[in-house]
Length: 301
Image 1 (tube, one colour):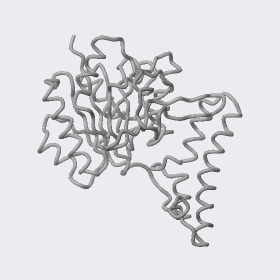
Image 2: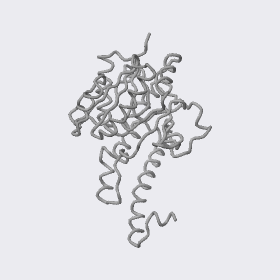
Image 3: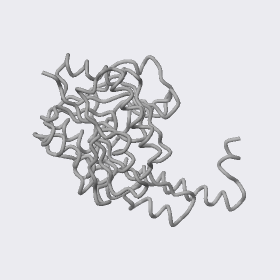
Image 4: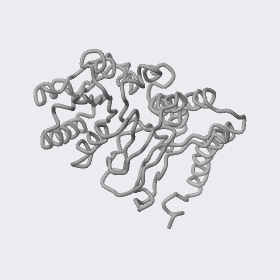
């Protein structure tokens, strides 16, 4: 039986990323003669930069689904997943982003893994763009202490990251999920986690449902973080926005929802409080130091 894998890519504008992403994806799949196994689905959530038209003109074999501008990441993933499972009868869903590039043999290796192992969920080793600095080898969540982190983050690649890791959750790129998982636990929670934490919430739910999640170091990706998230940019107004905007990884309400759902001790909330005290406190500290003429750059020197 030939496994069918649908690559789901939610996008909103940033056509320059999408062009590069699709060029590399189609090049990799066609050069390895893997087009029989992989289907690319782009979910364009109301882009105004001509994304859908460009894809249809240049890569007509790519399926384009169009949203109304309110899907965010989780809604886009769900739209693509529903289509892949219902219309294409896909065996696996592969989460992707348009700012991700893969090693040339990535898809050949992922196909080998699913053909020679019982795979329900697997993850990839993800580097920062154009570097050998690890961004993620999957995540851990300690329900009692509240510690939630990604293995290897900001560390230089080394032999210690050349082994497989069993993890609790995965980020939303280079994550392969068998259709059985969706049948058992449902789709991504697009209501409570429209942008951030939708990936970690889904994969952690899968862990609690009894599925093993393994990160394979030979599956290598590079992630361009320049277009991700919302920063405070040293502005009080922007700082407040980062605390309640869906585009921000510091959306306090989403973090609190995750901890309410999974934390098993009040101690866990101390870790969450520390995260935000450090974030807001750091902002205020440098605001004060800036008033006396001291900048971060000068302090490092």
